[in-house]
Amino acid sequence: MMSIDALRRLFDRFDRKVAEFAGATRLSCPPGCGECCDHADTEVTEVEAELIASYIESEAPGLRDHLRATVADHDRVACVFYDETNDLHCMIYRVRPLICSAFGYSAYSDKSGNKLFAVCPAMDLARKTGGAMQILFEPFPPVVEHFSDAIERINRDAYNGVRRRPLGAAVAKASGVESRAR
Ligand code: SF4
Image (cartoon, rainbow, N blue to C red; front, top):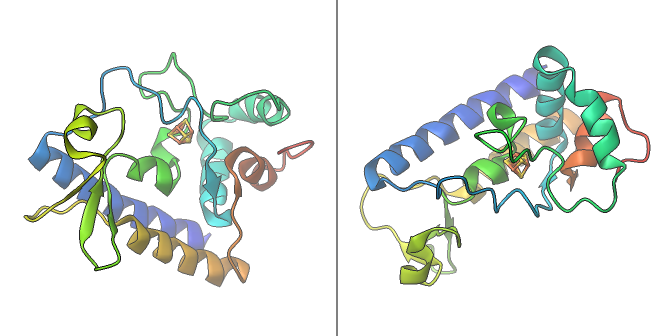
């Protein structure tokens, strides 16, 4: 599907910018931390859900049963793909949604157009900076709304609009395992 290919290219570009920024700043997530996933309420576009569904179909078909069971578990607060026993804590790490890649490694624009780095609260840096800091020298972290806008354009072309749904329900629908998905 062309929209999935376009999304993969966009994610590759995003990942390169993150790697460049993380390499220059030596920022990294605290060892063993999974705080952004163990109480996640992630929403995704249709095209992000299609990419994950296509990954599950071709590389991790066993996740279909997991997904069916997990989306029906309304008491679960962790992300449907969170796995604390896995080093990366994510069962779909290679195709995770933009918001997951962006968390802790991206910037946003303030009202004056300044690019502010959004510091992850679990990093030591958060205490020192109050949660955001302006980056004055390159390499800049990727600006999340630029990439999010680009995803919306891809989604609009493919689906005639943009609809965001909770991650589990969106992937269950895209994978054809939707039952009582939330
Ligand atoms: S998709 Fe992966 S990275 Fe994103 S919240 Fe879920 S477990 Fe975490």
